[in-house]
Amino acid sequence: MPLQPKPTIKPATGKLGILMPGMGAVATTFIAGVYAVRQGLGKPIGSLCEMGTIRLGARTDNNVPTIREYVPLAELDDIVFGGWDLFNENCYEAAIEAGVLEKELLNNLKEPLSAIKPMKAVFDQSYVKRLRGEHVKTGTSKMDLAEQLMEDMKTFQKENGCDRLVVVWCASTEVYRELTDVHSTLAKFEEGLRTSDDEIPPSQIYAYAACKLGIPFNNGAPNLSVDVPAILELARETKTPISGKDFKTGQTLMKTILAPGFKSRLLGISGWFSTNILGNRDGEVLDDPGSFKSKEVSKLSVLDTILQPEKYPDLYKDLYHKVRINYYPPRGDNKEGWDNIDIFGWLGYEMQIKVDFLCRDSILAAPLVLDLALFSDFAKRAGMYGIQEWLSFYYKSPMTPGGLYPEHDLFIQLAKLKNTLRYTIGDELITHLGAEYYE
Image 1 (cartoon, rainbow, N blue to C red):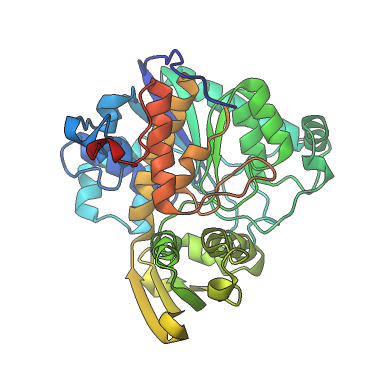
Image 2 (image 1 turned 135 degrees about the horizontal axis):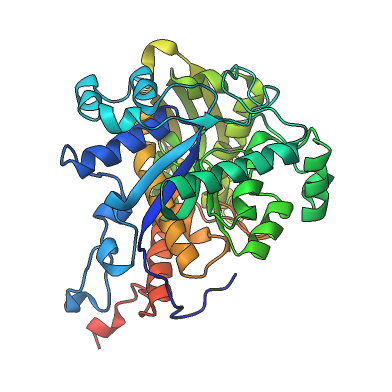
């Protein structure tokens, strides 16, 4: 939907409920982190909403408020957490099991974390083959399961006194699937739910339930989820903001930083080999070839779109790009992403760059969950709906309308995000032309 200048933005009053399918390492790190920030035990590093700024007007104006000062966002103290999971551990137990945060910190937050208990999840093992569901819903059809999820959302909102809800998918990567006829229209999709069509995965049942109620949905995995014509149709009908897909955290984050730099200097690339080791539940799920295929497609799309080999054949036409993910339990949530990049410069002379990113997967993902929740809630209150391409900054494989290629350059994505905020408020966009300083 095209933005309308200066829309009436509803205030962020009352409580905001953030619901997450998947209450594992990412979700519990996010929840515990927000509680820690509330209590002064840490800072929300990595969150644009909490620590970012935005320039207004000329550089000489020195008008640079924080984003939180500039647009009406829900306060951290007004957030309520909930979600669904295959396992019945409360948030404190799940965070201890995930092993991302220190036990001393978690023990300081034990009371509020222990009070968060997951609702039963919608699960189909044919879509996540390495996990076993212990805490799952049963129903007469997939439509019945969707209606149960909608009832969960309504009950959570009522019991917690929430004015608004958002959903952020933090669960596992499902096996790779392509669009089929059941996804082509909302009518066919709803009939598919009633007949329990095999081509409708759990993530799309969650997406349907949220969008049916007008609740913003953000997809943190490479699953198709909301990225199908039927759900796009529903989002337009119910005026629901949607975004996705796949949190941009480790290795792909580095690619969207480095590749624009190589292209801007017109340095050629002959090969980019990427491998990862990861030992958490996500790594275990991705050890299945079907789930890895979904992640591989998401990861491989980045370089092609940034480098545009069809426009720069001498530099990138023969680029060999390979991605590997290896499950390695001893590493836990501390992922290692290793890249070997073969580049060439003047007269074709060869050079190499090697990157070894020893990162913490959930530490990088947690602020993304926060920003997506706050920004999608803002979008809903600002009257924006459908695909929120301005949130591409947070995703490996950004959603776009059919026929429009996604923008993967991290710096262009950030400019798009900030200009969307300026445009929504009604302020002048920043082009960085700067000619006015020299006239």
